[in-house]
Amino acid sequence: MFSVRVCIFYFLLTFTSGSVEEEDPEFWRSFAQNTLRSALNRRINSNVAKNIVLFLGDGMGVPTITAARILKGQIQKRSGEETIMNMDTFPHVGLAKVYAVDFQVPDSAATATAYLCGVKTNLNTLGVSAAARNGVCRSQKGNEVTSILKWAKDAGKSVGIVTTTRVQHATPAASYAHSASRKWYSDADLPPSATEAGCLDIAAQLLRNTDIDVIIGGGRKYMTPRGFSDPEYPTDTSSQGQRKDGRNLIEEWIRMKEGKVARYVWNKTEFDAVDPETTDYLMALFEPGDMRFEAERDEGMDPSISETTEKAIRILQKNPNGFFLLVEGGRIDQGHHASRASMALQEAVALDDAVARGLKLTHEDETLTIVTADHSHTLSLSGYPFRGSSILGKSPIFADDFLPYTTLLYGNGPGHEIINNKRPDIRKVDTTDKDYVQQSAVPLDSETHGGEDVALLARGPMAHLFQGVYEQNYIAHAMAYAACIGQNQQHCAVTAKPEEITYTSTNPGNSAAVKHTGALMVVAMSAVMSVILH
Ligand SMILES: *[C@@H]1O[C@H](CO)[C@@H](O)[C@H](O)[C@H]1NC(C)=O
Ligand SMILES: [Zn+2]
Picture 1 (cartoon, rainbow, N blue to C red):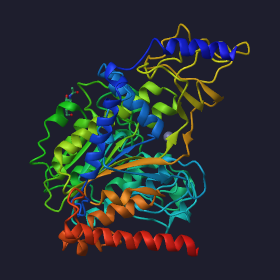
Picture 2: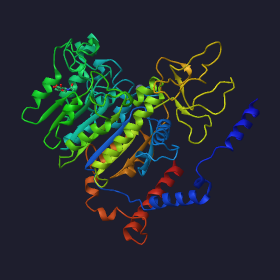
Picture 3: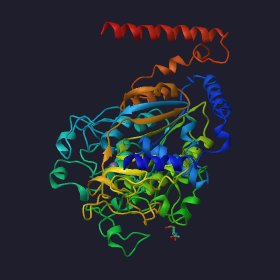
Picture 4: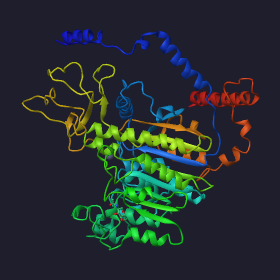
């Protein structure tokens, strides 16, 4: 049976092929030679990074990047696989090891603490070291760790957070809060013991800790008093304010910024009217909780992540000392948890669009741009689909149970179903629908994270520091070094003599290049020696 199906497979294969030009070996040779030429022309950029833009795809593992790339191409009516995403053009790539101190497979709070604060920690905790215990308020005292957002602000830069989730969610929260639990969004979420021990909810810390210039995302209901009706959904009780302490943090924030031009907006009309040239501070909260999926966004009410990224950069870049901006595509993760691959991939495509916007508004000479993920998911891309097959489609041959399966599957999640000892028959199901739930091997209400390494792509000053395989907490240290902020400021001195450390590979006669090569040889030899000696 197996061989019959394989025969059918190869029979079909002879009737499908890529474009005619791909049959010509010269196509692949000249393509590769072009790639080689640009690799040889690559210049080490050892400038001090005036600005840092960190694009974080929550849950954007490598299978998600590949599948989003194919989807992006197919949206543009191409085969898809050969598409070059904006993030694909970044010259330096590395792999980050994502495990938490206490768990092999991590969550967004522990990982954000690693790549923002430079310290690995325990699951569910943020802005605290691993000496703090999940959910135990008392254990966080004295174990707080600060983030690159604060280091940048302390160095005189402007700072911002842009997300598609609530701004109190794990990823942005790790940039400004210290919490033994990522779930303490408002004071109503704190257990009595934590309130008694004096822990402060994440929303309250948004105002208290680092002075953040731009705050964009969702999360209004954690900022307003219990029962406070939401401006967009006035009759919906679940959208009402949640705070037990009666505080209105939005009004408090506006009062705190008196004397500055500070704008609070909650819809797109008001957002579009914000003039970045004259605005010092912006808080934009577009939903009571998380923002909507890009595929379900009301374009009249909420801006896209590209639009929010642009507004943030335009406000922040007025500072002559530069800026640090975290942009989170936060709902890739939530699409995956629901095993709605279409949703997750469209979120990843939207993030890649935002990357293009960021590159357009900044200069590679002075802005370090990074694209990475906090952790992966159980998504797999498999089954020998033909070239150009819809990434949301089905395998050309059936499985051993004589039923089709989709190219995208999850290791676990809500898509597991067995009826009469069989998987659901999807022959008549439109698996490309945005609401389709992909099948999984193991039944779980919510699909889990994946624990494999995540990719990091870097461009701009000191982007070469991100090559190799490293612990995720290294990222914060390398970003800070590039910008000459935080713990290690030796880079400020290094760039005083840029001619000795920059070189162009296309000019091998250049004496600086020779000097650099010599230094590299020494480094390489000492690395070999240390391998031999240890
Ligand atoms: C947007 O917000 C402003 C300020 O609260 C409000 O006056 C306006 O009606 C809102 N627009 C929409 C379309 O809801
Ligand atoms: Zn998650």
